[in-house]
Image 1 (cartoon, rainbow, N blue to C red):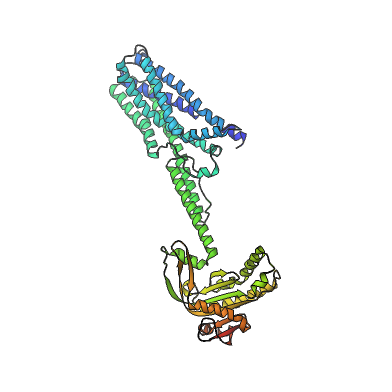
Image 2: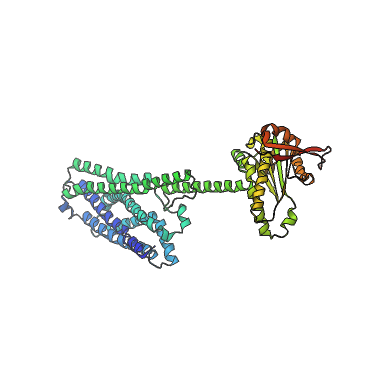
Length: 508
């Protein structure tokens, strides 16, 4: 905050003086009317000869003076905090002042009332009967009106204090509700409308009933004062309620459009502050959920992520599905990576996978897991691959072309891979415990696909598929793909040899 901004804020730190002076004016208007009602036969001039009236005048003057000194003392902490080089203690004291402004306003009213009582108790020649019958009931009525009047000025102070909040609070602290006394909107409206609208109406009715000799100036000043004060309150209500609500509506629209960084500042602890706090919590929750979804999508495929997020309950069981499984592995990766450092190896694999994985996803495949230099992909109707066997073959051909582009880039030594594909039944489900799960696919189909990939070395080719794949995919691929028998292979873990086929793309 610049020095010019600080001086501008300090120049507005006169709300307390305005409050005290307005309290004195309001009390004078109310009490003049009440005196006229209580003593209808006396004029305003002759009322001044009564000890009870003189005591009231002295008490009001004394209460204003004492309250002004209290406001000066209270405002010094704000002034020190807004100085060019405030100490941490000054900042902390200023924070407490702003946070407890409603409480301190009540204390100020207590001081105002106490000043009256002291004068009434020690005023010479004032009968105790007048104190209890006249002054104390009047003070009670005025006190109710004063509380309502006080709210207008406190809200005005808080509106001013919004611009100084950056001095007293760190940025993160402006997004949470602060403690302290607050007043509900219903209470504020009631405390202002009743004394400044309903009371004057009844006062004038009683003046008319008892034919009191009310001073003409007071006759006009009270409704004028009430009108001005109520208008000021409505303006403050618009500023403190309507403007924040409009701001929240704008931020909600931004949030619904995907701007999860949007948050709203909270300055006080009223209903609007709690509404803002609820919005900030909602924005934080949505942002956290989006970050989890984004991170989740990096470890499993977007298709699996969507399937899991759609379910409200986690099913630890599984289901049997028809699918195709693709395994891909780099040939002779160990000697290839021997000359690379650990960071270089990771960079190499990331670059390699950035080439060969897009064809998998382009053809409806789901990358289930990365296994060092290998990748396992699943093609299943429930996750978007209806022609799962044909999709797996198309992916393998796309991966072959992508590998050629990777090698042509010249960034790393030439790489060869092996791809094995098998189709059949497998089990899909969440494997693990309720606290730590992995959505994966298991079964003999997965094992056979892995063994077929290993057989590519023996077959001297880069892509091998089982007969189950050619049976399901042949009619869908047409003349674009040619399958060549590679012969029966005895795969590990199987009693009978399995007929495998090489895959070649036909020229159009």
